[in-house]
Image (cartoon, rainbow, N blue to C red):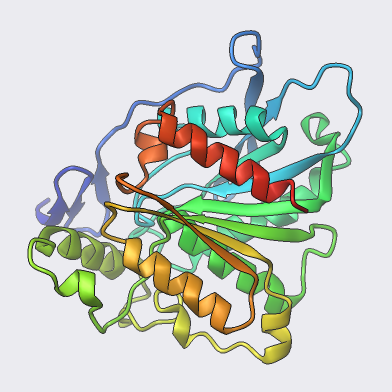
Length: 310
């Protein structure tokens, strides 16, 4: 079997369309919260597909109040990534403590074996699972489904946008109230090159993002598909009025920064309450690569403040 393409730091694509992915350091779920203030466990969202998730539950001794829920979609260009990766596990567990919220981190199926919209469908199903399981899953006993937030980084940020659109257009998952969106370094694109993509020295980054879109979008589609180019999606004025408030986090040294800034401006133009926050001097998904850094702690604080404004 031959290779037909590769992003050597991440994966190689085989001639049968499957991917040989680089293995990253992972972290097991643990019921022991004595050292870090949270416990975690893995749950099955849908065993037939399969879709799984990891719940992070903070220690809140002596309190009986309800906790907001953050549903998180990891990054990886739709082609790789996992909630079990050490960086995501540490970041989300610590965030659950910092924000006093329950976190549901979703493992969706990857492209190119499962092209879009599979990732969107899988992540949307996590909201349906929340609705069904909140009354029977002990770890969700204190979950406040009237305060649910969607968050994700890179491709996960893209998923946040597209899952939010689905909840708006279908007016579904009534029991789950999406109060806000937190997009971290979101992954969007278009056939037209923007300034950063035309700049010299960005050829490697551009080739990687183009390749990931080619592997992820439906066969025959290009980067002006509305899943990639958000400007192509058709929403009525009434639907825009239901779009949740959003915060868009960008990193100063990130190749995708300009796309994130443009996305925030697009939401604002359509009447969405939106805030843009930049981490100067930081790279793409720094919070996953360096989950215990000072910059990551600041991001967790900013996210917590956004959640508790609702």
